[in-house]
Every structure is written in structure tokens, then in C-alpha cells.
Length: 221
Image (cartoon, rainbow, N blue to C red):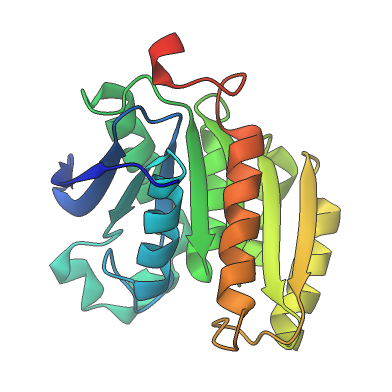
């Protein structure tokens, strides 16, 4: 059963990064999205996941990790320390936003955004309770993997062979609650019939298990 939710355009300071906040009536947590290279707050796959999470009672934030000027330098879209710092800024914004400041946080990262989310989770061990990586490059998080305390789910397509190998290695380095889900028959973008749905459902179940405080909504926090 879905809930009515409000969509709000927000700016993540101090750089004025543009974001889209979906806010159900009584959110039980906030999921912040970190998109991959070449994508933005308008990512169709991330938008789909955000809508589904909103229907399940989560607030969601999709935002641009780079300014318009920064996007012109292709090196920036692969600069994991830079991208993770922007995810950290979004976490900081959430802690003071009147919309979501009391909510526990989960991070959803795709491709290089997954590495940025994991580094941010290692840097922000208090607010961030869970991470989901979709077709991600968690290996790019490097030494930060061993310091992640948030429960982490890695989701990879079964036909995305190189990325799957990288995720298996990253799983061994993670010291937190962790799991690797392999979606049979899926390639990197989960374009095959039924595979995107499987990824979305696994993500929702993980966040539902690990983000809310004792299964309660924001009014308890």
C-alpha cells in the first residue's frame, strides 16, 4: 500500500547542489542516493527505486554530486574522495533540515556512487545505518571498506562478470553486517525482464531491516 508523498526541490549547501526530496507523511528513515558517472539526480533507475522506497514509507534524496562547472571535468566523475565528500555534505544537510533531521539514514549507491557511499558511511558511522550498492564499484572505496559499520548489501547482475568479481573481493574486506545478492540473468544495468524489480525489492527489504529505529517512524526520534 503506497503513501502520498510530497516532492520538494532542495539545495545542499555549501555548494548549492540541487536535489529532489520525496517526503511521505510519516517517514521512517531517509535514503540518500549517490549516482554513478554520467548520471544525475534525474537517473531513471534511481528515480524508480526512490519512488518505490517512498511508497514503503522512506523519505528519499536524489541530488547532483557535482556542480555544473565541475561536471565539465571528466576526472571529477571518478574522483571518489570528492564524490564521497559530497555524500557527506548531504548527510550533514539532513542533520539540520527541518524536513528530515530526526531520521536515521541509509545510502544507495550505483556504479562509482557506491564507492562514494561506502567511503561516506565509513566517515559518518553515526547517522548512516545501512548501504545498498547497485552494480557498484565498492573496490574503489579502498581502505575505507574495513571501516564501514553500516549494514551493507551489494547487488550485482549475474552476467556482470567483471563487476561481480570486484564485489566478491570487496565483500571479503567489509567487516560489517554484509551480504552479496546476485540477480540471475542480469547485466550491469538490470535491463532484462524482472531483474530491475528483483534489485528494487532486495534494496527495500535491506533498508527496511536496518534503517528504522526499532521499526518505528521519525516521531520516536
